[in-house]
Amino acid sequence: MRRIVSLWLPQWPIDRYSRASNNTLQAETVFALTETAQQTQRLYAVGPAARALGLTAGMTLAEARAIHPAIITDTANPAADANALEALARYLVRYSPLVALDGRDGILMDVTGCPHLFGGEQAMLADIKNRLARAGITACAAMAETVGAAWALARYKAGSIVNKGTSLDAITPLPMRALRLDDATSLMLNRLGLKTIGSITELPRAALARRFRGNPAKAVTELLERLDQTLGRRDEPISPLTPLPEWQVKQAFMEPAQHLEQVDHALASLVDDLCLVLAEGERGARRLRLDAYRVDGTVQSLLVGLTRPSRDKAHMLRLFNEKLSGLDAGFGFDLLTLSALESERLMPAQVGDLRQEEAHSTALLMDRLAARLGPGAVLRLRHNASHLPERAQTVTTQGSRTLGARGLGWDNCPTTTAPRPLRLLPRPEPVDVLSAVPEGAPRSFRWRRVEHRVVRAEGPERIANEWWTSADDRSRDYYRVEVTGGSRFWLFRRGLYPVPGVRPGESELPDWFLHGFFA
Image (tube, rainbow, N blue to C red; front, side):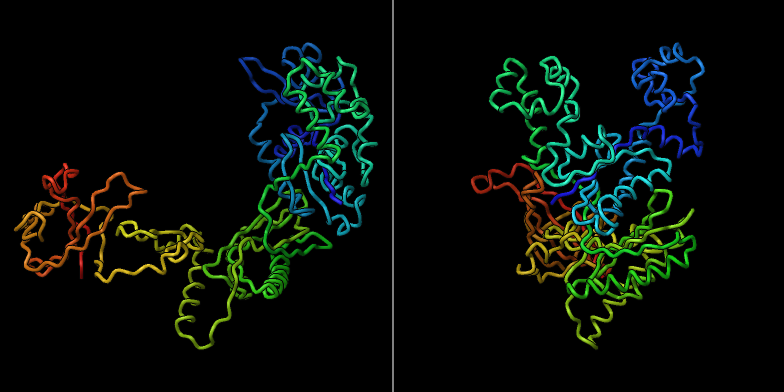
């Protein structure tokens, strides 16, 4: 049976402002946040005392002061509210990995199979509300078997827990707005005498469609869709805020951990547990994340990447120890989770293989450098599926999982036997070339105002452009040349000379470029 928890935060902007400013508003303080729209200041959110006086969001500040001249106001920050709501949703991942945002003041959680870990559904819901209350957040919560039913109950019958098959009875007395309809549709239903959800469910579907005849088709479609979602006739999936980890282990504390030594000790136990489950699945971790949940409702995360899949416990702990000093315990951590965000199949390695040992030690060094300096500070070359020299390799960050030439199936293609220069210019540079025959090897060339006379030349090696990535379809003829001073260069001619009747499409004379240097 699916179990959905809907959290509604009716005073979220006020609570977020109070938490951010460390200024707990008194219950009798008449306070509101304002925003400027069309050169008019309006109330964005109001506190409990202001709401008791009849002040509502959307009212102009002048109207509010006419009702209560001593109102205290400050400027709203919707962007900070949205960021803080997302951070709160990440904190609630401690209850279920399927957590999603629900508008500007709500959070949805799919807790199917999770309540027994917290002592049952009632205990789980109470624990969520108590934690948020201790953090200074006003929350209304409800649990049901559909998203629509949980949403409606959280806003109109907070604290409800609806069992399987009883959603219809629970939402029948609720107003039409509980179906998540817009204001226009709700007003139209009220004018037709349909004021509660029960008044709609009692009507046959055909009669309901006839009653809406003449109204916009969008309103009818929205009404029926919302009704089906609330009653479970139509599925409504939850898109999680963060991708689900492949593997995850947890460690809860009886008392909040306020010292990093406690975190370090718990982390060693978590790494042991994670490596055990990875070994059972014959997998090795590629990316790890440590989430530390603080008692004030915030989460701090540490992310490490590994160049190669690994189950080396000591190596994982060394990587995390490079970053543990960045954690701020505040009033303490009450939960740690260690997640393997990415993993790969880890094949057995041959003992005593020098090449494997060298590759392994290099990977360990790259991991430690990336953990200490940041992943963007450690770069490596990656092979691309391209014959063009400047596109054959690119620089990527450490731990990148982008496919290389082998991943694209180029491992079966024949490799070129022509030598490549030791140094390749970032971009080919134009040169002036003198040749004995139009399409022959160069006899001399001028590069950067210096004349070079060619004594030996090898080639050509023809490389065609990639027609799917470039509008230039002219091929390249590469030559390896040696000049009188002993230096060796890599030149190419782009394009062919036009020949009447043979190559009528060639309208431009070819260009010569210098692309690299040999040792």
